[in-house]
Image 1: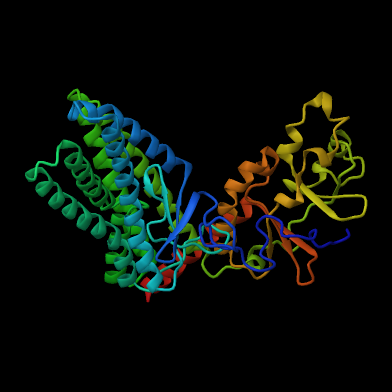
Image 2 (image 1 turned 90 degrees about the vertical axis):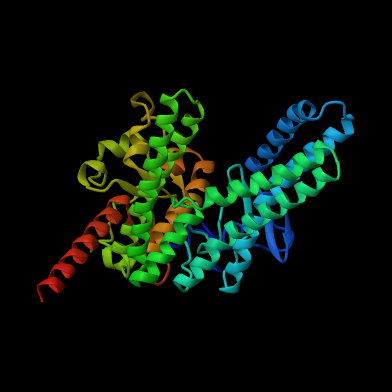
Length: 444
């Protein structure tokens, strides 16, 4: 089989070439600061971005203000109501930005570039930085650093809450009217809610990161600390779910909202615990350590072959004679052009298999993930997870090869293929290795 380099240009997920910037980090001049955000600008040198969800939140807040403010203080001019509604929107989005900026400023002290990105439910980063082009979070250097970054946001929101409440009192005493007082009161309420809600010890929230920092400082083990924080998140989610069910039983429809939030928190915390365990199991393992002796490569599929002919396996190199679940596809020149899985082949209707070529159903090479023999599995796995959004935008073909990675040798030749089963096997062996080492240490 002729080996080949991937085509020129960086395919999705390839580690070759200069590292991609972090999602949300500042890019070249004229580029967006965050691919998820829009309307980016900078405050204190930190990129600030609003996602479409944040825009929707602002529109909803403006509509709510336009409907409720006239009832609160009737008889005012239309301009007064519009100004007050705009003030509510500015207060809402500005409070979220201030919360995120506080995280980012403290994280910058420890060398992490974290943009302040605001979505429909608030901040998206909470001071977390990620490895370039992946979903793998960069670890802060110490429990103290994580504590400081995590607490910066809620403390800022609490200070703003106190300041807004203090401003509402003199405004009311001076007879400024209900509209200015309402805007100040809204600022106090929004910031108070941001402070309290983010202190809940759930996955992805500041409270969960505070719990992890405390557990890390006490145990000295960041992995164990992550598991403790995840357990706290599950307990908190269960309590919130129970409170929501109780409220519903008492006839309060708001209980539905709390119940849903609790279920989401439980699910997110379980996913976080699974991620921590998997990362621990794969720690120190590189691609070459789990690659099969033959590289896991199936016989080459040729892009001009018809699906039916390939499945019939007249040459003895098709699916019937191989345990593989994916097949590299090459063009007339022997260049790698894609990857096709059994799932993709089975998705072709039986009456179309004799007129459909493999190249028509395979995932194009531009949407494949590439790795090297020495890349750590934890980094590769995070890159594959981070490529999920790009694959969804690329279409169904790219989704069929999610979790697969083509391995390049020292000279750029195709050296192997990793499948989701390979990652699962590596994680299982990692758990067994860790448990065996723990049992051996306990017997001594």
